[in-house]
Figure (cartoon, helix red, strand yellow):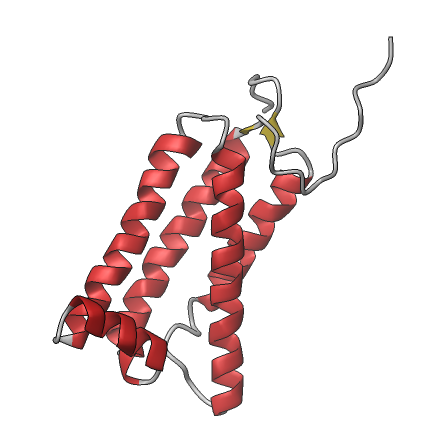
Length: 155
């Protein structure tokens, strides 16, 4: 009997499913994004970041409202992602998890870079490390096989 062919750790085209630890880590990533959005709103990110101001203005002339609507939609999409593809163990869950990993890692890095370049506080920098920790941890889990190709759960 021969062993199955080795898969590249970043092969997101598999029909693998996420294990329980990866699912919990994904939820922590989304909770971190919710906290991050609250921090950004509290410290008015739209006032200091032109893209946030532009996008908020597309939604409402009241920039704080537009920003709140956009961030609520982002978090709601994250919650949906957790409840449907991830928790229901859909075959495409690892692929959508990689989307969130890349998005949140870049988000966390961006806030830290802006804070360093401004030599001070930048809205979102306090919670940026949470995004980096949970996106990195989830990436490591998925690369180490934190999904179950045969649909069986590993605990």
